[in-house]
Length: 157
Length: 221
Image 1 (cartoon, rainbow over the protein chains, first blue to last red):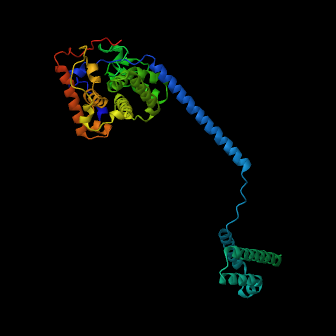
Image 2 (tube, each protein chain N blue to C red; image 1 turned 90 degrees about the vertical axis):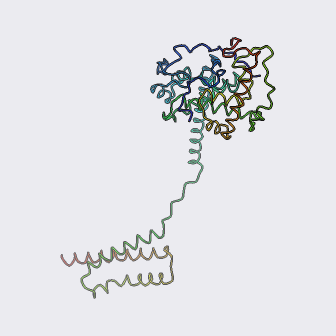
Image 3 (cartoon, each protein chain N blue to C red; image 1 turned 45 degrees about the horizontal axis):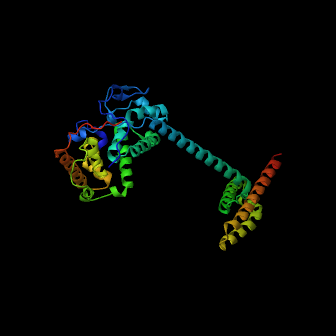
């Protein structure tokens, strides 16, 4: 590229070597500096205007726009949480229950819930229907565990 | 005919304070001249930070080179001053992107050349793609009636595009490939325009009534 070369050799034509050099108007720098100041001033004004407009819009958005409704919990997530809790409680219950025979009697509240769950799965129920059933199952298990722990404590006393 | 510049002539050798490296305090050390003048790193850094005194030092060092490049091609002092203003305003915005992998003067020269050629493009009369057509509008080679011939006058008798090719190739070191890119033409176009332009200049010189060229006969006051 030409920018890497500075041809200080005389031009091929002697005519061009004799070209005079002229100086620009001495006031040109002042005009350029003034133009620069105006340019920067316009940009600062535009930036300030932009910032102000953004601030006004933001404030208006806060005041005018309706607040977002509480986000409804995702049925799938809710179902998964109750299912995991139910499984954890089931393991806890199995550690407390000494004999299968006694467990069968104590688990009778769960049977109705399990039947309802099975029927729901059989008909292809949605997560929204399943989640309350798993919630009920977890609560039933929690009650059974609490009762069992109380009974053990009573017997020990 | 293009307007003759009214600014002070600078035919004499450049004064000592015009030569050398542009220093941070605006002074210069021995070095090159015109676009070949190196720029010291402190001034460059200050300019990158938007220091107007640094820009003023850069202007003092390179404005004349920019002005003469534009003036020789455009032929009008007012247009050349517009180019210098545009180039320096653009420089102030873009100097942050100057990586320093090319000499600063060369970078500035390219900006000045591009701005000048862009100005030429605005004039549709100068957008002639055929070198023959470019010179067709010129009359036969004849010396001026007053027999006052100088380099400036002869150059300004050429079409603006031809002047651009001559100035950029012969004085600023552009290659034909670069000129072809600049004009959006082929290299052969650039070569053809240059050849015809030089032929034209030398034909004028060979006219017996022409006065010797090299120094302006009329003082540029």
